[in-house]
Length: 296
Ligand SMILES: [Zn+2]
Image 1 (spheres, helix red, strand yellow):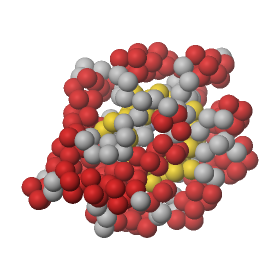
Image 2 (image 1 turned 90 degrees about the vertical axis):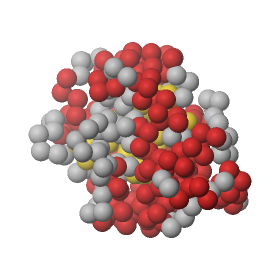
Image 3 (image 1 turned 180 degrees about the horizontal axis):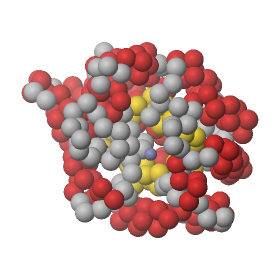
């Protein structure tokens, strides 16, 4: 099964049809959805979704793009939420230096406080680092959270290695589907496979084929195929290894009744969709062999 390590299923774009969206994703092989919060106002909505769907794993956090709207008690509410409903990570937190982003000093203060909380509680973090990878690395080295994921990674090979040294995995998704994303595609092809997790960031970060529509969580099966093609390895190996990596980055994913990393009919359907046309030749046995050899 595939783990989508970053998907905003609580976003307004999915409000009308989230059940159908999740059904389509499950049919494409997704077994876990990590849904990170962006403000305390979103906590209840995500908690409701998680109560209705066992495959949803919440993360609680304060996103850098919303720090100016936060009430004074936001950090206290975060701590209370973590105590009330233990998350797989503190997230989505981080730094954003895009033009028009909120006050930098305030972003840094909120990020630093959440990293300190992660270290105190032994929780991994899910990090947003837009045009701010260097500053994020500095802050991680200073505050030393246990590890986690830098989502939608868009840094250099050297920064990638520095993050791996801090026990982070790197999220790859829609950006690597563009032929012109040469740096991201090279990283996706050349980083150790242990470093990579898959994500959609749906409804955001469109892939090459999105055409202005919302990003669908089911598309992650095609992202897995893109990664398999970039690395020249079987799709089943990508599915198995990136799911293991997600569980290594977010150990609480292992405590919820996780599906075993063996192919089931759903995974096979996903692979069929992903390979679009060439899968007639691929049987369940072949995929199982692929996964077993990937795991040994
Ligand atoms: Zn996000």
